[in-house]
Length: 113
Image 1 (cartoon, rainbow, N blue to C red):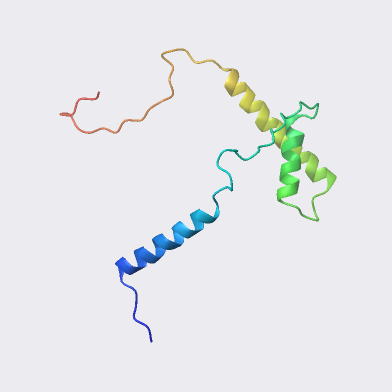
Image 2: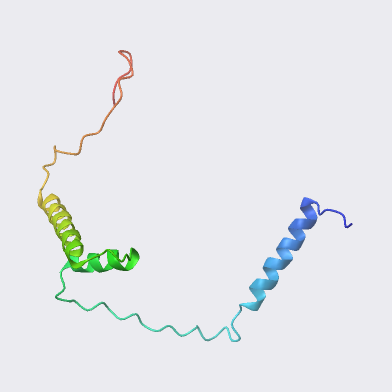
């Protein structure tokens, strides 16, 4: 049976392994950067956002009982959530109306900052 590796020997072997894998990934010529294809910009569509989200839900959670009626109910829920989010974004807060920050009571001798 072979002897177990101590930490120092393990570190040497690990470093050599990491070094050897790094050498294999060096490009053949360092002067030429690898060619990158430009990512096309997304094209605007006339499909409403809730329909996009519904397709994501159907693709991620397929089920044989997902009928058109159930899909329409899910689409209605998504429309409702998107509408609520839009309303919250449009509601402007004044400077002094920051969200509530809870501070615990620390006793009469502690001054709140």
